[in-house]
Length: 109
Image (cartoon, rainbow, N blue to C red):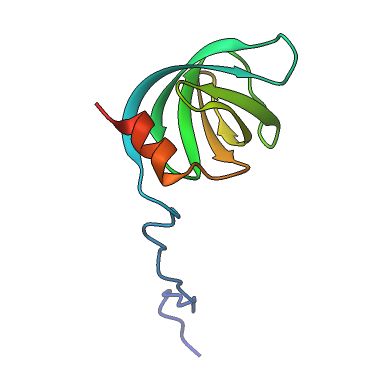
């Protein structure tokens, strides 16, 4: 048997899931505080917001899967899980989604 040197393979492909977000996101620039409870609150900036979460910029180290408190202007303290984190940014998933009213208040110009 003579081989042509070509190899073939079989693979299954799954279509990419686009728009996996549960709710629309809005770019914002909100001064906020982040902490783990107690007095260890640090300043941060919320740069992206949805009903279910936020993206923040911070100089505080946040560990993936930790639960933190995000203090938002006009709506107060919000418990969130750190979904991902880099040196200066983190993605948060709120334990309880924002209400439409709170979201609108935070994203209003």
